[in-house]
Image (cartoon, rainbow, N blue to C red; front, side, top):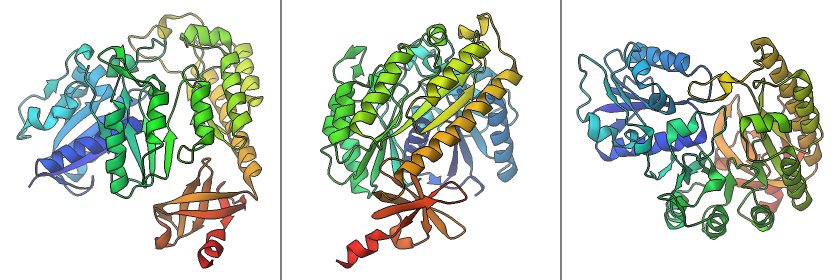
Length: 439
């Protein structure tokens, strides 16, 4: 029995796909092991969003060779689709598979025997036109369930359509079937993932279902306590979805809504499909229905043409929004996108300075959000990550709670009262669930 180990770079979607590829290996008689357990095969799932994909890929390959010098090393994922030849030239790489091939890698590579030259299987992205059901399993307390893949948008900074192809989705029936399988395994929380999750419903280029229809059906699934929507574009976050979540017992009051810029000028240059006024309206609608809802925001700073005045417009816009945290990215150039050819390039120094300013703002926003929840009662789903005798969990509205480790609490939802913020920035809580259990 050959041993195989996996390493995942990037997003929740990549984690769901790595886990599914892992199950394919196990069904074929391979043994899944840890990265350091001298595997015969490594599968490295790569990302193209971060600006140092090549550096990270090389580092993981080098680490793999250190632990298992004779292992067969396979690279898949977004970076593998965009740069297959470049990756094949990394010392130690034996095979590179693109988006259309990665789920067939066991069939394609068969014996996983090393050859004189690296094997490259990367079709044109137009060939990646089928949807592959995926969900993570056994890695965490929560499961990442892929419901959508690819993107039909043409943002001027993004390579994802080139790496994953056109928008396509699973069917509602299949997603519900997967959710039931996950429920039977004992998992309590499912995070819905996709490249453009709110665009769910496209099959063979035709819209046959909607994301709203999907959440309505998933809300009926027994055995899953919590659903979260990983990320959804503001123009696709319709009132009906917000209203449904506000009334649901299973869909959590937590949205992650990409903004990218608070300047309409920059949003237009980015070819985003909304303006800041729509974004502000989405936040206001959420908060009017769910005052304690957590709202996360993606922001890119230093985009070509972004002046200091444009950046300050973004800063002040976000500062005035009732949001809970930011994910901040300094703009980085991507080949085969329009943005690098635009005028007004921003220096790396200014990109990083602006990013630092927004990260500080994010910490202030997060602390204020946490403070608003002190003395309120929630249920916390505790995870199995334990550090120095402390375990952590998440409330419905995505407040991270620290508690003394108790093995009984792992993967359990317990009722607590939030009491204050500790030195690590985590919420502490009173164990009100003990009183509940006594009665």
